[in-house]
Image 1: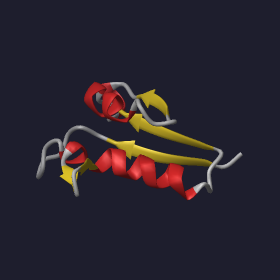
Image 2: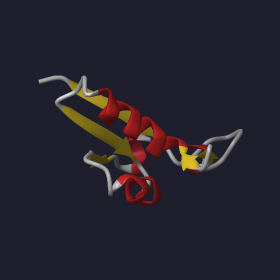
Image 3: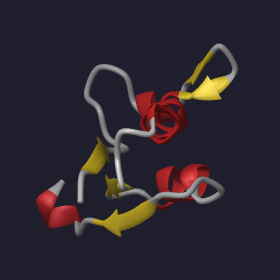
Amino acid sequence: NIIGSVIARIGSKRLPYKNLLPYQGVPLVLRAVQQLIQSRRFDQVVLSTDSELIARTCMQEDVSIIRRPDALS
């Protein structure tokens, strides 16, 4: 199996919530997940995040979500 992964944190010192900011109308994290899915190169796509907001943003896609504890973020 080939797994594609997106790792997205909610915190950023320079640009808070940057993974949720839209690029051409789509949140960055969702765009990354969609690009991996649409490439059809992966058997599974996984999103690893410390944020419920990021997880909810990508829930409608065919992606497995791994919620990291704050201590690992």
